[in-house]
Length: 178
Image 1 (cartoon, rainbow, N blue to C red):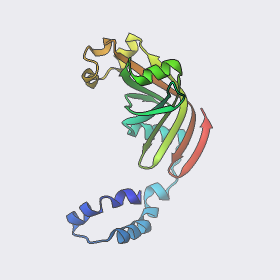
Image 2: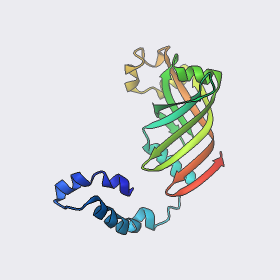
Image 3: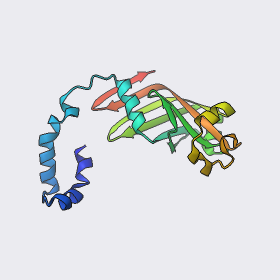
């Protein structure tokens, strides 16, 4: 968190006319950060509740398929819908490499992070072509990729379901089956 804040030191110095060096600013933050609410009070939510909140803050996720040569193929995708911390929906083109990978092998990895907290999941992907579901999940900005709307034959959904999770949230590490 301190390193994140330090990247804005120049801008802050101009606006406040404060002339701290990065070392001085870091020393001051180290003195004050332990007293902030996030560090001072224990967050009583469960790790899965924290992970669900974390996913809600993320616009993008990284999903990895397994290619024909057996190598992972991670790609960044827009998260369009999520349930809990381990169920994520994404939209893509029916002819994409990832769809071809998932047709051959539905095993997948998915991860997301926000300000140093992160979740890595292993699970499976279902390719959704059902018109009712595609219409329910459709978002207006998809028209840039699928000009025929929710019934565009090129439009499919990827439904990821995590079965195993590794968490790193607020300094807490855990690995578990779901």
